[in-house]
Image (cartoon, rainbow, N blue to C red; front, side, top):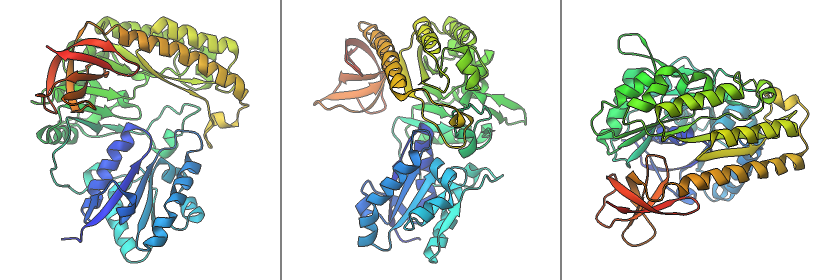
Length: 440
């Protein structure tokens, strides 16, 4: 039995990083580590990083600097960097911040136990390979601890789209889909530990093409339908999708698979065909709008979410107006919008930028329109009945908070309701970022 040590993990970025952090903690559990929420109480600090946002690497170095006093107070403290910044920076992290002991990329964290052995021998450990073996198959099995009512499940990693602004193909590698049997086994395990809702994750999740039980290739829709057969699994979601991979069978599943929730995150990035071509998105605004029409025909109450980049190199006012027109035509219940910032190594990084002040002004206009749509969608929920999966107590005595089918946070006075219960609720009030209701 390994000596018990304490592990502090700080996670940046996407939902997949949250999932990866859980797997890394399980892998290190095989070496005697248990998690703590206090870095000053830790024997190892692990930063699981994201490279999507602007100046991501510099923010990691800044964060590492804040841990320097902890290292000085405890020379045995181990510090590691994982995730996409680790993949992109590699040895540079150790060169710039010598107190870092361990650097591991997102495809090799199953090797953490062996890397910890290297640290125990007084060395440093770096692994940013893209190995052929399936990391999930090589992760040590952790203890079957109870889980909350919701969980993430990575089904696909990497991306072959090579959008001009995106680092994912370089930090996560080519598209790889996990075998169906392993996913079904992990999902069953999650349900047995208390999970009632699973969100399927992938950098390009609807490109899923995993090997089925008899060797045949399964798409995401077939996987969802099979997961829906698991007793006790009540809700299924998936994110993030690409318009070019929204196949007919997946569209149909939104209409006839009761456990697939009526919420879809489908990024478009721009409403201008000229900019979409410059982004290498390989779809047009018209194609996207027609696709949304087909999905809504299958599931009329669908709540749509999207991503937008404003100020992409070469964007004119006319291009931006096309984005506003698309948003007005589609109508979003939720959306994420950002001002373009270059990522080293991507094609767009070599192009002349849009004036930053002009890009900021455009972003404000877009966010105002998206905000209006989001508020209208939430206000439109008042008076409706929804199904709420309760996840945690609220701030007020007797209050519980959960998520509706449409991913709205809902606050309810429900002192007798337990975490993990699903109940019908009538919405009575709409706030800025949440809803309130009463049990039926």
